[in-house]
Length: 622
Image (cartoon, rainbow, N blue to C red):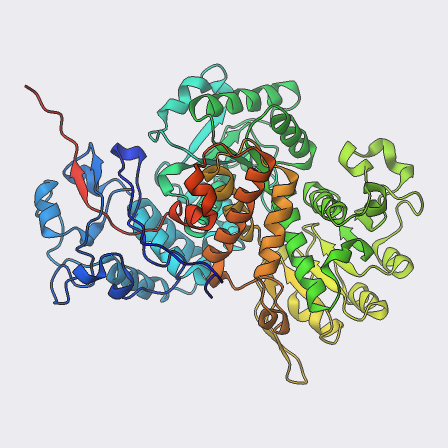
């Protein structure tokens, strides 16, 4: 699927100095997830039609990367290593001739060889290991595999497989990737950030490991989450791999099994809390902002007790930041609900007419409610009118005024005036919600009785069990379709296979995955030089995503586009974010030429994984 009205211009890679500026020559189509023919490449008229080491390669001009390392050191650096794709001239020029096998393969053949190997493996966690081994060996090839086969690879590098990868983090750690900040590093963080070798970091994903997916406190083992998220930033969002930094704030763990595990790699102590915790986070935030003043910090998998507090503090202090669990989940859910309304034949501008039941009152559940409320206000409702649409339940039932004293400030905004602690099933029976969202991490919570009760009073109930990994999903796609006789509009946090009904109808359930939002949001915020990630940026991102869903998608039961189109989606989301930054007066990086064609500006900024020439940076002595 190509972008309507979007015409790519011939794009040349920009000149890059040393290790902090890596880019690839751009193809005519940045978004294709299929192997491109040689005629689709820049300079295709100069492509060697004959066999040999240049077969299938571009002989047109590509700006080289100047690097300080040489010889076999290049082969050990995943940012520069091309493996068997190094041509004879490079092997001579870079001084490692004889250190590689004689056969020279282009990136397409390397990719095919890797795919042949990984597809022979049946275990997803072993496939994850194979991908991370490639990541540590050759980042260009790794991201090319992701870009060209994102639908196949995304579940392996992120949900649902990443949860198991985090559980096995201690036993599978092989080489450094990312940074760790601990209580012992207090007073040193401003200097520590200079240990990171790249000068131009655009995006940091940071976690304290306190609430990893639905698995709880995994401490430093949560590093798999920032690594997986940033792989998606690169592949789906087009941010170059040297411009991202995964971080763990290792403040200890309250997970006794980890504290008793002799092979646990994190700080061997109970979690620090209170002022000491917030002081550590503050030192980290000041340190990264000092070295990289325009860096976007994405908070990831912080527990509900601190997530909103941190987000509010650093947004108010002018940091470019957002919380994916609160805002990203909310924006993604909003996009799915807007598509669901289209699927039902209802007006997408009448979101406030819906009755929305959210199971789960943590950061994700409240974040979804906040984003949906903001959307209703964009459509003309007042804040008080919008709040009446929400029914939020936790393990004790409906959130109501009787429990006000035990609620945090965000939860208090959505308390009902009556029926405090009313059980989930009774809320459905009494208030007849049209939308049911699950973010509880309680597998199987949406029982047959609950789902059938939803369907009893709503012709086409919207059912979104968003918890992951798969074992934590509130219900499966097959169950939702079966228990509603195929009438529900469904999306889930983890992927499910297609469902065939007894009458022969087939449904293709969508995955309501934040990767539809955060790569494009981060790309738009960073390339525009946005000074903040505003609530309205999240709204326009969700609307852009919802508009991307075609009528054919909706007819198949999908409320999100195919993952195969994820780079197109990210481009559209990024354009919407840039345009909102311009309207809001917070864009600082755009020239008049960029303003004249925002589509092309964003496209030019999107990294594409392709090998470029390397030259040794030499210092001349006179």
